[in-house]
Amino acid sequence: MSEIHTSIEAKLRKAFDPVKLVIKDESAMHAGHAGAPEGGESHFAVEIHSNAFQGKNRVECHRLVNSVLSEELKGRVHALRIIAKPT
Image (cartoon, rainbow, N blue to C red; front, side, top):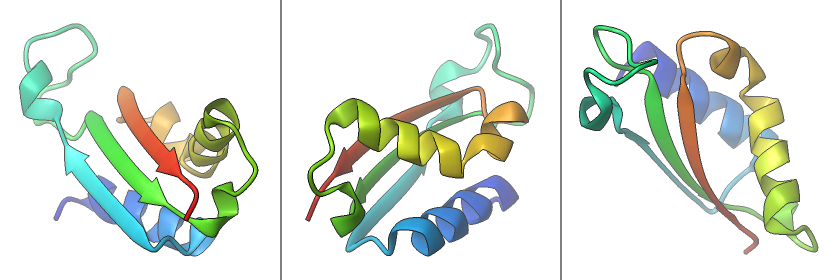
């Protein structure tokens, strides 16, 4: 597992105590595109299911995830695809 993947997982587990968490590095699918640095670790997909999302709409859930991962998104992570659902 990469350093960024590990950081994303630790932060999401701490913030949301998810019952399901799947993180995929999709950087290889974007190699050569604008914003895709050499070496990957720039495009991730996250599927997270947590009680923390109860009563929130999709945009609110995405904002919560983006807030928790703000440091990664300011740095090497160029794109984050999110599926966030309540349990």
